[in-house]
Image (cartoon, rainbow, N blue to C red; front, side, top):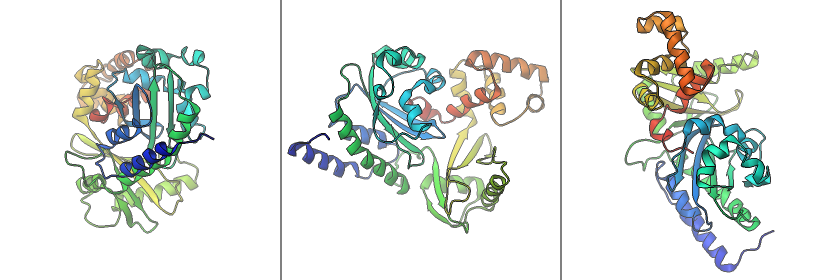
Length: 351
């Protein structure tokens, strides 16, 4: 067990006190960075909000430009990411706790994302109790993170997670310039909302005319159906509901087991114009972007052709070009790209 001196413990105590200071959701990554850098030497600090094992928001300090598509494509090669998201690992881990440095340096992910800044060493964690999940990582080019540093980071970890959850539960009322990236609410078995943040209220008002503490009827029916389909073992597709508005859409996902006494829901809005702009930045034409957005909404080629007033073969040709430009082979993979760029103000700052 690592030993900490008196001055180090006093600094740690002060950092924890500062960590719980109220900040807005958008300010949270910088706030965490300002606390963590008091104790650790690193080149880059990476903050992640993870939902369905995907980056929902990520921020790097200092700024680190990178290829988002490459990062997403090869994320399965990240040993720590897989240990936390797929195998239930807990606590703080170094990459070299799981794989040798030489093997890590042979991966596509390392060569495309980490090698340009020679970021050989990383220590981090992904929490399993929050929704979305909090992930933090420290990266540097020289000198492995010591056991002492790992213990210190692990001591700070539960306080970081609790501050993250507290910021979310307070409803982000301190947000002065916009809204957090998602809405969040909890509802009990009777349909009464027991916890909700400001963004969720705004989204429910916009899409359902929400005016009370009761879950809108359409969402209550969807939750009941989700429970029924789970009981009948036909749960595929039952965990998400998408409602389309005027060039925008709202996606609701349940992040609790179907029979949990309280259901936790995450609400995220996508803007078609923002999606299209992000896809054009990736090399797609305006029409290709339009086709791909309709694909992501579950439309078949014949349906898209009717919507756009073109031949089905034209849609097929557009899709072939889309696959080639994005480096994917299936509709599902192409649709995932739309999901990844749905929040343009977030996607540009991910790791």
